Image 1 (tube, rainbow, N blue to C red):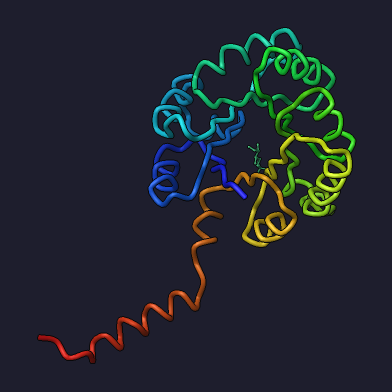
Image 2: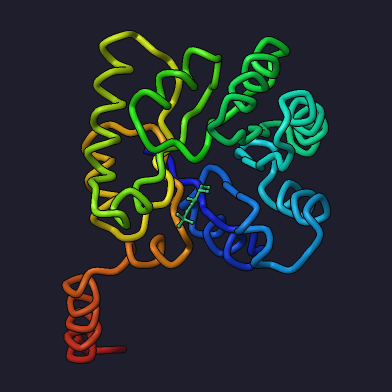
Length: 217
Ligand code: E4P
């Protein structure tokens, strides 16, 4: 399972890249707003930072299909592996169909159900992003949604990749990895949590403590 960091913060992206943890960066309008900088300038900065081998996901703002397509066509110029995020709605599906016909990869975002995921796939989306944390927030089961979408896609030979979005903690990551999810979008804080284990910490402390008793030259 690949990890895409869910941030537009350059320091966080640099840090995750330096540890070899990520294969891409995912953004949305809220993530961009958090940094307080202009959208295209921010995306250009991230694009240069991650290099051509990684992926960059960015979202359109328009609500009409033709305008979404226009925005998408501009956004893909920002990076070799740019994926245009399109919100789940009727106009969004029209835009996905057109962009996909033009060979531009899309990710249908704000997906909260199996039918929505199926429609996104049928419209031609290369990726679909179910928001598992937000599903949990309303008392449903986000991991269960990933499992159901995976089962349906596998049963029908659908090639659309599942991007488990809105992950909030390490248990989400373990659960979706065990389901064979293609990609997880992960906040920086959660990436750091994944590194930690109390036995790794205490084990290292013991190694260093024992090393003190080793005769030195
Ligand atoms: C993906 O990029 C999604 O927009 C993101 O994971 C949403 O996360 P949130 O539900 O924590 O805002």
